[in-house]
Amino acid sequence: MLGDIKAFCKWVLIAVIVGAVVGFVGAAFHYAVDFATEIRELFPGIILILPLGGLYIAWIYKICGAENDSGTNFVIDTVRENKIVPIFTLPIIFLGTIITHLFGGSSGREGAALQIGSSISNAIGEAFKLDDKDMHIMTMCGMSAAFSALFGTPVTAAVFSIEVISIGIMHFSALVPCIIASLTGITITQMFNVEPTSFNILEYCEFSPANIAKVVILSALCAFVSILFCVIMKKTSKLYKKYIPNPFLKAIVGGVIVICLTFIVGEQYYNGAGMGVIESAFETDIVWYAFLIKIIFTAVTLCAGFKGGEIVPAFFTGATFGNAVSKIIGINTSFGTGIGLICLFCGVTNCPLTSIILSVELFGSKGLPLFAAACATSYMLSGYIGLYSEQKIMYSKTKAEFIDRKAQ
Image 1 (cartoon, rainbow, N blue to C red):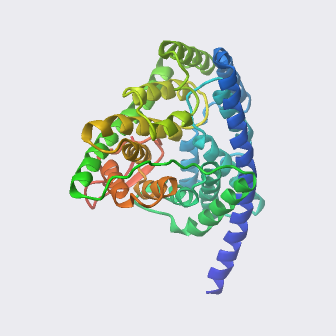
Image 2: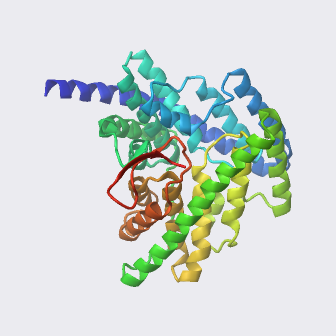
Image 3: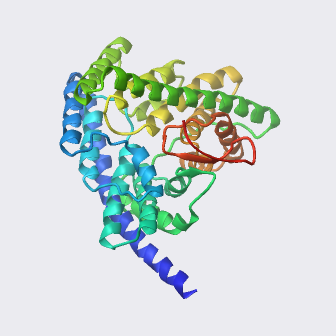
């Protein structure tokens, strides 16, 4: 009993420190990304500098010896292996993400946040001289604080960090530090008036057998779109590696392609994170092909070496797909948009519990039963593919069978 109390006090202290430090950095990161986005929107022609921005990112990673950085995959790997996310990851991913958003690359920011959080927590863990097993928990602790600080969804952040590593096995030893760090992180960002991410569903569908069936149909379609999202990301990465292995040339070519795509589309809705379009999808109709264009923009951007993350683009893809399909199957458009957003997140991350909690933190609990059905459907039908190749799926999605395989 005394040992449990000592461990509890140790982790509460460390988690508060991690959450506070990550919260301060997360607030700065939030405002920096927002400022970069505002500059791009004021001066849309700045997108023409995107190839040079990519070249600069490749150069920074080269001189720091991080040209083979695998982003969130490396963070996930550190939880299982005796590795750490080095502290120099913080400034280079911070700067790389700002450059990507400033010049119009299609990217989120959660991937960067996870790397920032884990690099800080690993540095704090080393300062406390923690052993290898505790350092694994520290990585999840930093992930929770950063996710919470950026999105303002503390419970989602804590559960995601525990669930995403090994699907089917949750590291409950990390529950206290992850929750405390998550709550501390959001507390700090709220002190700096960082608004939590939330969306307003204008009208919910009633809970009925007919609506359950419609939600399951929409969720199944979203699961297939999540597979498409992951496949396009992975195929684009392979094409870059095969035909443009040089990271500097790859960044230039990727930037030029994004510029060309932007001129072809004729607008910059698909550049940056696209949070404005996501918000609009809950209130008005969006062109049906918006989800596909966003996938292409994101794949070309991130696979070329630009930084940020895939989760917000997945939100965009799911929200716009749900918006388009809900009209066809007879679901309220605003509610269908929410279902699509959550199901795409679930499909690409393979995290059903996180997704259910996310639906509550983003939309409230009113539609929880239907969101739960949607997440379960998306999880099972999205197969064994995902954004993170280092993620392990420990149990089969269709039977009580131990499989222990990495996501494809």
